[in-house]
Length: 250
Image (cartoon, rainbow, N blue to C red):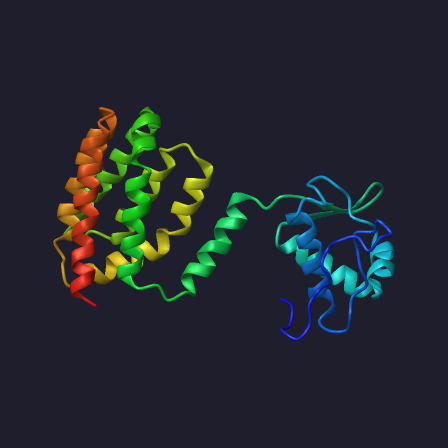
């Protein structure tokens, strides 16, 4: 991270055509990371492109190779570059994987102190919004895996308990039925906050597991029939009950 008192030079040409600019005193490696990250975001350095060597970057930035090496390691940890050794090696720009991006979102959500009411309100917007895609794209495997989660829910209830992690897993699996990687990433990143909000509600409303699992089955039945209106109605009722509970708990 860059300190508040210093900033990396913006990645614009100084007239010489060079994209890299000398670094002013401060947290040197962090400033290098900021400058290269911005070049990547703006498309001036593209995935697959090899960055200049450590020596060349050190000269361009006006810093030591040690600082450059530290910055490249930071970029590699962020998934923005891949460092290869040997002949033809170097630092190559890459795009972060969905897993890496998702982990970043998870960390952000975990540290944001979201309230159960905020989480549930966000779920109403997100989960109701994806239902048309779910009904359109869900295949036999999606239906089978959603029903398998419901079966595990029935087994848990028969044993006298229903872990809210099962409910969070169900809703995350629904998102996968959209077959849209961006939606899946967002849903997976929200699984933790969803589970925590449900667990807080269940402390005062232990019946949630019984009713919730039944509604999960009703939802899957509607999706299997491509009945968007019915699936939406079931899910709206399902999440609205949680919303009422968390509103009372404010």
